[in-house]
Image (cartoon, rainbow, N blue to C red; front, top):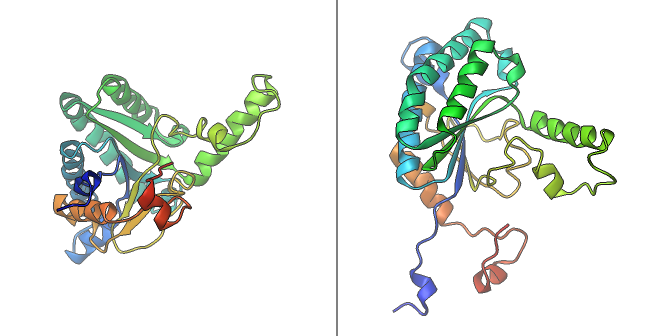
Length: 253
């Protein structure tokens, strides 16, 4: 018999999962196909993962779709990615809405086409009251950019007299990040075998559990995500405390 009732409590799912979807190009090359074929297969994987997260009652899923560094890729691949992104939005927004999924975007939209910016805004507006899952798509996003724009907002408010002699602390910076209304990620996943965070949510990942898998993104399915979640649930999150402290009184940020 368990020693107390808490021994029977199932470890909680992560509230927020953030994923770098790596490996589309390599997946296609292994099949002697152009990289575009891999990106298209990657969109299908996104659908499966979004559906699974909604079923598992995950609150937030953030997907790194296009980084601020991805502009360095060949021009034809960048053009293809932007076209695929636009086509996917046109096809998926109504489906997300019907499934009560809220769509959010983070990143610097100024470099994107006006048509794409308008479609992104339309998707956010249409789904803003949905609450089954918040799907955050990071487009032209970088962790350095996010922190810089937060610092700039604080500076501008000080200059305008909206903030007088503010204390620069975690709370103030959090209030000005692009994710200000979201919980920080509990679980970070990177597919494709690389083991780095690549300028993704650098501030927000401070206490996130990291999970790396060699599975290429188009092959990352519900079973693979379930394994990542099980790994997360088996870890002890200490947030600077000792293991004994956490056993006596669980502490979260």
